[in-house]
Structure formats: C-alpha cells, structure tokens
Length: 180
Image (cartoon, rainbow, N blue to C red; front, side, top):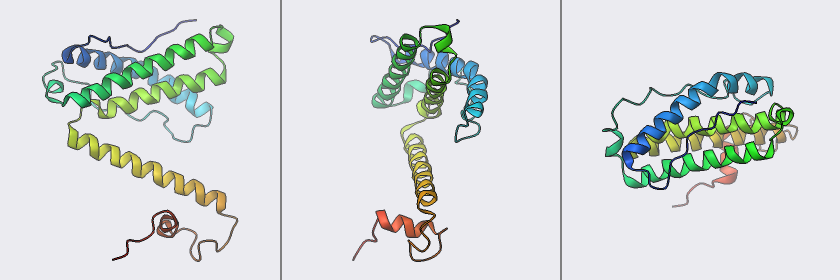
C-alpha cells in the first residue's frame, strides 16, 4: 500500500516557504487528479469531472505571492494544514490495504483532492479576485441547493404557485423582497 500524503506547512513557515509548499500541493493535486476523477465517476459523483481543471502552475518565483495580504496567506496556511490533518485521519482510520482501497476510503480521499483543488483555485489570487471567486462559488452552491430542493418538491405541483422552473419564485421563499 503506497501512501502519498499532501504537503504540510510548518508552524514556522515563512511566506516564501508557504509559496513553495503551495507549489508542492499543486504537484500533489495534479498527480492525484486523474485518479480522483476516475474514482469520482465510478462512485457516481455529482460533478463530472469531480476535480476541475487547475489554474496555471505558479510561477517559479514567489514574488507575486509575497504581495498578498497576510490574512490571505494565513487562510491558505490553515487550509493546507487542515487538508493534511484530514488526510492523516484517513490514513489512521483505513490502515489495512483492504480498507484503503474500499469505497468509503476512496470517497474520503477524493474529497481531500477536491479540497486541495479548491484551495489552489484561490490561493494565488489577490483579495479582489479571491472575493469574486468566493461569491461565484457561493452562487453555484446556492443554485445547486435550490435545484435539489426543487427536485425533492417536484411532486408537489403548483406548490410555488406557477412555473416549476422559475428559480426566482423559490428564491423569494428564502429571500423576501426588500420593502421600501
């Protein structure tokens, strides 16, 4: 059983070291991506491909990364540590090779790869672009939630008082219009 763990930033990591650790995470995620997409497809993951395309590889120099705000670097540092800690939990919980190759373990492992890809999609962005990307993700998750809600409530014809495909009507249930 071969275990390839994601990198782990130390407590004393400097911003330049953090850049290099994120570059290592990019390499690790790239190496795991094809396998994770194949397993995600086999496990009927809701998104195809399960792991989206990664952005461009970070430049060879940390100069651009060093211009990011300290809180942004801290979020990346904390997320990388959480990714590694969760991966270590998986290793501890699925020690046997039979367990390691089981569907439950694979499900957890591909989700770690997805977490890494999501972190990498924002880790090198400046504050404005990061916030825009976060809003885009929130809107996507919200839309998926409402679509799931509609499919669950789909048998209730006319529940929303009209067209079942009108997202605005469902949205108005949770976000009433502003009264002036």
